[in-house]
Figure (cartoon, one colour):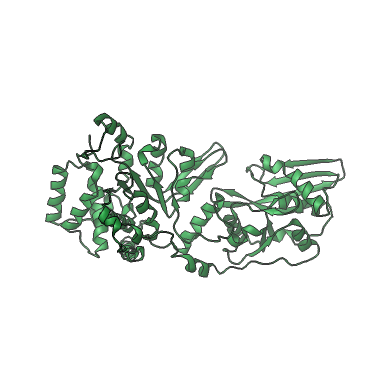
Length: 511
């Protein structure tokens, strides 16, 4: 007897429905699995055999042929155990399952018949709804994630026996219902860190506010213990809240990567990713033999923090150049191409020198050669994509001992939101959301200067020996500063502040 049952495969951050055809006949004995399956799927026969035996069923001693279509698409992982097992039972007439084709069935089997959670549940559920399936049957740990998708019945099971009884005897399964919007709104403002906890560093806080308001990439330069990491961890708390669309995009990526917790249904705050400096280029941008999203995709719609940036391998840093520009990553292989979104805000930190001190600090023991080699770890093209360079000075004792709390993230965020709304209105007819994304054409149109502002930036270029690449960056940052003040025009004091945020372009650093 031939039976068809449906599962799903992940390709990038999207899902594709897989038809699992199970044929059982009496013309011999054997178990044949075809359709470009990986080793985890090929080993499923052992898990299925033990699981069925432990719930009172068995794999029949007949010729079993299983085809996973489309046959030219690679399938991987143990998530097909449940669908193959139910297919075998149905094809061998051990159970009746007349409406089996109305459901996507996925789950990894343990030897006792219980189910283990799987990856990529959200894109699978979205695809199931789009293709008109009535429902989806999953391990119980994955149901909250799948229940985000409306107009789809989501059933969570703990043991294969529950699925067998559902199809064979009509025993109802518990349907999981989730109020996505309520859950989203309840958790949208829950942040573990707040800017009020940071003592001193008012200049750095202001730079962070400007960076958040315009979506600018920023690098913090300061000695160890000055609060660079502390400041970076609080950036998500002042960024605009995720929209429901952005939350779904972000959740899909984390779901595919297997980073969603069992109690989490939807990501409600912007992600903050902080990879160690020993990370490989594949782990950062994504890829591998079986492509997975990298750290820059896991930071999509959020923040990627590179602590001690010069300590990262140069090749690792250089592979970020294109994603920073295109806001997506394309992983190409001989048989397929996968796209992962990667629209993130880069926050980096570094010491001013190998010894940890600024070049003019008496405690600095690094030679000119050592400092030059240290600074050369960051290439010009990469720094070209970082709009704001801010020096973070050591915090004095009086500031550390002060009892008064600093300004709350909530208050800073209100100003950021107003600036983002101004930018959204300005760029509503363009494929641009905020100031960091504008190019030369938009700079010319939206960043006009009066005579005093023009003379100021001209003087800065000459006196401070600013590089040519700093010019556009100063104009973009000045546009954001003007938006924070709700000023239609860029004024000279906006330009003046923006010039201060180009530390690494000054002659002081060009050793």
